[in-house]
Figure: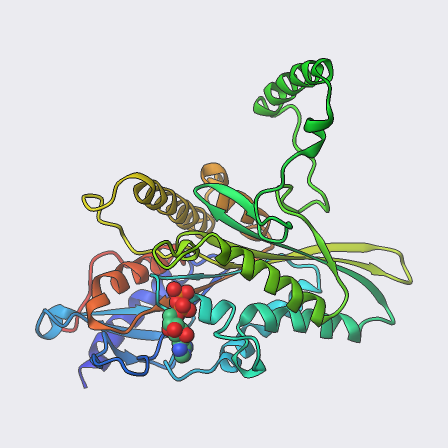
Length: 387
Ligand code: ADP
């Protein structure tokens, strides 16, 4: 009964700020309680049909402890992988119409980012996450157009860890090296160094820029042409294996790095010969949890600082786009540089905000929601509660 007053108050406010919204869609997905979990009290108190959500802080009584949010969509924890995918399918279709699309999952570790993007296992199609479904669909849709278009589909898979790009599809799972350096004589090397210095200076001055294969691809990661769904499944397997190779139980690196699957589509109209290029970025971000700086040192501190930097750079870029600012700070992190072509302009961006329902996560959940609110341009400022 309290909800209607709280929602009515916020609805007015939300409508006022609606105009500020950029072309980012924000979908909120709440992880269900897991089997065997004792704690069943949820921080989520209400899910409305129009993307409304009320979060309750168990340590504060009454209206003080409630806060409402509104996104494009909020899923009930029971929502299936198919339910979620059916909402984003039109975005995937638009990649084949020439749009750049970026879909990413944001949230603390354990909130379901990988579940949404990859899925718990690939053996059952029902469990497939967005990545498999999107790639499958790209093939399916491209097949329906074979009489009018030829498509070339290439895939890159990379991990961004401590501001470095690692190629997940290279044979050793590390960033691609530049083997030609090793075959050079000393004098060749000398000349190369001189040219490199000249080039880097010109590059810094913005007089020359680095050529990017396919116009959109990240040069640090290898490109792989795929012709059928099984090619993609094989590549994803290699990528996932490489991603986990660097991890041990004590060092679950995958939650502290961003994983990016990029699908490049090149289409040619058979009749007119005109061509189009587009890309789809599917991103499983590093866990957004704040790390207590007093408790970590060394590598962990460095990782935390890099994650912090790149996630706030991402937030700043999306915020700048939502506000239609003239300057968009893409260059502040590797992540935003990699995603640049799929953020802003005509590109379509979708953020999955992943929530852990446990009461113990209340403060992380609130900061996740605030990030999403700011990124979507629907920043309401101070907490609002029912009167
Ligand atoms: P993250 O990638 O954010 O660290 P995971 O995707 O690994 O989180 O999810 C944590 C756990 O919760 C996993 O065991 C996962 O299978 C489970 N899980 C997440 N979302 C769901 C969901 N919607 N339904 C069922 N289980 C889920």
